[in-house]
Length: 441
Image (tube, rainbow, N blue to C red):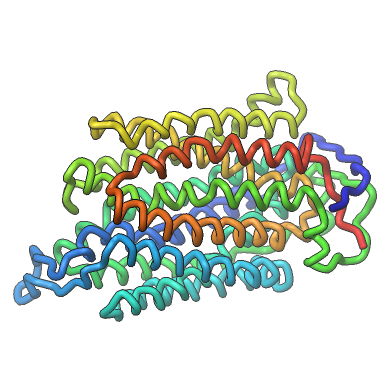
């Protein structure tokens, strides 16, 4: 692995680019839709485990019983694993797609693909069918973060990127909040198939909004962003040569170790509350809304946290690492959740953990433009997303078997408690001080 000499970085107080917070708002909405589509299956898991579902129809003549598919824990874990494998495959091309076509053209393509796949779940009649639909959902959803991080790098100066990332990344939490508010109600009154169709209607409007509104900042506006990087970039570097930088692996392994924890908290919490505290579909919403609602606060506050440390006198990159250490420490108490008998005690610790994860994630994503020129950001983020998906592909089947045969979530929460501190040690070892890697041929 190689490191290039540290580039000279100058951060001035940037002039505001007109429209940059509108761009951030569009990224927020896209991420919200992304996670709503992703979360529908998790909230339907308890009812899909049954053979039939009894409905409370609001419309005269609507069926009162709907056939389900009797999905087991192992089958659910395998379906999540299929999604993650597809996500890993898709993100390899998604990062290159947005780097080549740009965010304005590339982002709507991946959004359209995942929206069609999400609605396609309503057509399936078997566990295998869910696996196929989930595969295509993973292919499409893989493009969201490479495109969003690239757009952030184009529009925001280094000192504001983690805040912007925290804001748009909070869309993941909002999506996770809206899903339990919408999906159980639709499933109880109209059936589980209607739940998959409901979230698909938002994407078309977003695609039109993005296509009409988004533009890449003019190159002459680089100075107004207050960022000057020397020496100037050399000839374009082949994507595979980026794997030769230690900084790449620091980011990639950080995603590999910690992203499966977030997906565990998304995909398995409904099942955890259902099995541990005997909550049915109509009572799952409130605990999950509280947990994911507070994680939204964590995303924004975690994105702001480096600014707080800078105000205390730290440099920008030490402040970034200090913020990540703070978040990693706040996640540690989740290790006690597996043994709790208090529903709201579990909600409290899980809320702290999800909030801290979102703060961690905002800063981890921002290390990429901290360490690399923005023309490589989409590709490098895609590397991290591949690693995250592979981590989930390993984690999900293991989790399914642990739950199927031990009926205990404790081992999964113990891993979650330790993963972030280990990941931070790896990042600091491979990229000490977040030293800049100038990708030159």
